[in-house]
Image (cartoon, rainbow, N blue to C red; front, side, top):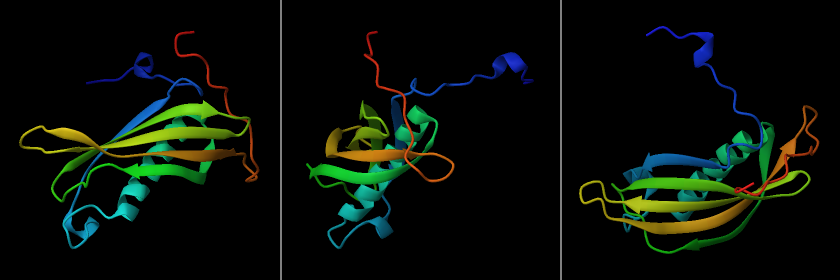
Length: 141
C-alpha cells in the first residue's frame, strides 16, 4: 500500500490525554508468591505516565513525584496487564497523570483493577529547565 502525504497526521500538544500500554507478567517480574513485584508495577505505571505526559505536552518530561499508589488485588504471573494513563491536571510546568493497572486473565477474559496511582511530571526545555505546558481544557469544550 502506498502512502501519500495525505496519510500523515500531526497531533498537536494538548490534544492527547490518554495512553494505553499492554504487557504480560512474566516469571522474572514476580515474587515467590507468583505475583507482580510492587516495584515492577510502579515502573510500568511510571512508563505509562511518561508516555501520556509526553504526548500531551509534546515536550521532554521527567517524573517529579508519585502520589498515592493503592494496590487493590495481586496481579499474577501469566496475566495480561493493561495500563491506562490519563492526564488529569496541569500546572504551569507540571502534568498530573492518573494511572490504572488492570489485570486480565487471557483465557477467561476476567478483568479487575489491580493498582491505581498518580504521577506528577515536569516539562523541560532544551536546557533542562522547567517549561510551560498547555493548560488542561474542559473535555466538553
